Image (tube, rainbow, N blue to C red; front, side, top):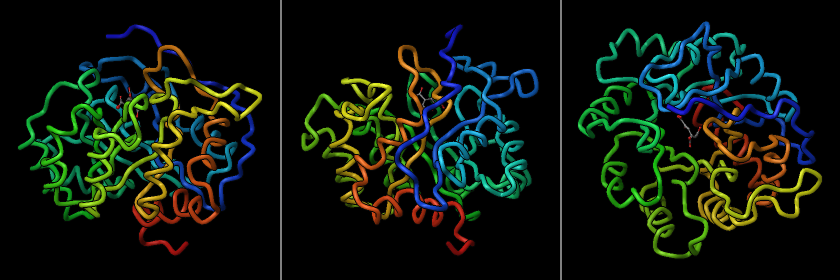
Length: 301
Ligand code: 0GY
């Protein structure tokens, strides 16, 4: 287990880009506080505590209206911190939980009542131990009648092996961070093409165009400028946004668990958005229409 962590940036810069009214941060986490909601014994890293109140304050500072809070591996399948945040969000947050095959129908209904709308399957080997695909398929079949979807997290090199499983899932499938492309490879090369083709052939597959700070090799922008803003990630994210404008989501990934070298400034992450969604229409779809359709379908917006 990793003993330490980088703390999140407690005073992010005020973004220059103003999200459209009603914008949703569709990928963020709450961690603990560990004294109240202990981390999972099987976790591969220990995060910094990051409370719901800190998350809601960040939401307001960055100019967002709502959050989709995603269960991270350090809390395992104990969704109590997530549910606590959802219940205190004044209906401004929905959730993505992690459940095991042993979850009961009553537990699923309680999660649904709290605002959970998806379950997450994680295939990143440094984060989780292996779960057989039959178990995951069984979980997907159980959550489908609730109207939930499945969020998947994997690395690009593993897509050839995982593709058939993803395309057989009975729900909408949302891919975290564009399937973590290697951005040193060409944007029209065979590796990213496999991902783009999967989305093209399967209209139930969506993508988060998030986490330039995890994918970039060229590195972060200077604190005082946008010129160098994770520029190697831009062609990948732009391609997905422009090819599938109705199936993309964006999130901060606050508080950025498990980053060892560089902690992003969330204000500058927001300033990355107009580089990848270059028109007001694309920005509205990415930040408002798409997440609302997926997570608050009952609400007019
Ligand atoms: C992320 C990315 C990471 C961690 C997790 O569940 C998690 O622990 O998703 C990562 O280490 O890449 O989206 O938060």
